[in-house]
Amino acid sequence: MAQSLTGGATPFCCYPHPPSYAAGRATPTAPPSTRRRVVASASPTPPPPAIEGRGVGFSVTTRRGLVLPVLKDCSLCVPPGQLWMLLGPNGCGKSTLLKVVMPTVESDVAFGLGKLNLSLDEVRSRVSQSLDAVGMLSYSQRPIQTLSGGQKQRVAIAGALAEASKVLLLDELTTFLDEYDQMGVVKAVRNSVTASGEVAALWVTHRLEELRYADGAIYMEDGRTIIQGDVSSISRFIKRKQARYFGHFEL
Ligand SMILES: Nc1ncnc2c1ncn2[C@@H]1O[C@H](COP(=O)(O)OP(=O)(O)OP(=O)(O)O)[C@@H](O)[C@H]1O
Image (cartoon, rainbow, N blue to C red; front, side, top):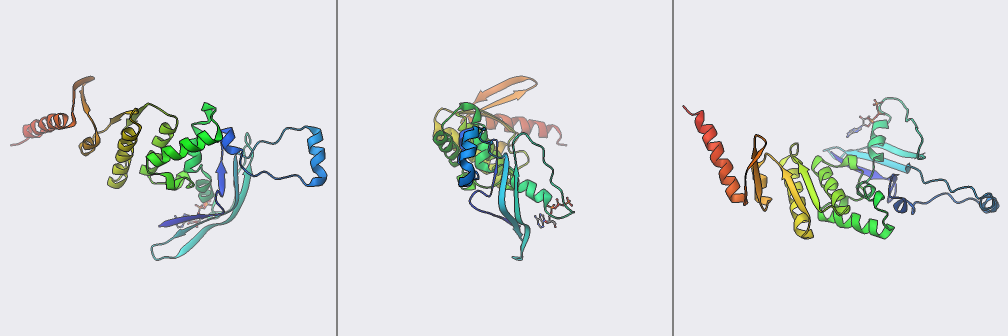
């Protein structure tokens, strides 16, 4: 079932962004008659909302092409540091609104950069480069919750790349993914490592078909690394072990 989100270029924003990244958000301007008073009082500028949306719509399209509008016109604004509740009758769209209001792919990757004190341009550049590296640049404005499992994994990898991590430690990233998403994630890591020339990745897996994307492999048993080497030697080693194991049960 296809899903579509409406409501402007960035219908929802969901902070925390790095502060500089949030600065471009439009804030209401005081009317001329009150503006002088606001300046004179020297009161601090209110922080940007933590969650904000205007006129957001969300619809799903059935296999028969029927468009079902779930959210028709939703606007909300939740300031940082406050607890707000979302209420309404069964089926009015609360859970859907919650899914749509989750961070976009872009803000999710930018979030991890908040601690690095980077300029807005640097944040933008790192976010788009890292999303491009994992093949997710065209998903920048999609809410995270609308992505498949494999796409979420690729965004998580983009987050590590954006922080300029030199080492990626990846534990069974593809376990619950179908074949398509599995290959998307493996290839994203493979391409990122190749393109950077300096990022090293160690990937834990049970799936032998993933070995063909590796430069080398290590095999462990009972708390020990047994063998380390090129992919074809390790594949042969594991296949011989499997053959002996299954041969043991043959009548
Ligand atoms: N993927 C979808 N396909 C078809 N209909 C959907 C889809 N997602 C939500 N809906 C429909 O949209 C409406 C809103 O659903 P939602 O779960 O957001 O409501 P809710 O306010 O959270 O309900 P409740 O209070 O019962 O939990 C429901 O009629 C639901 O069946």
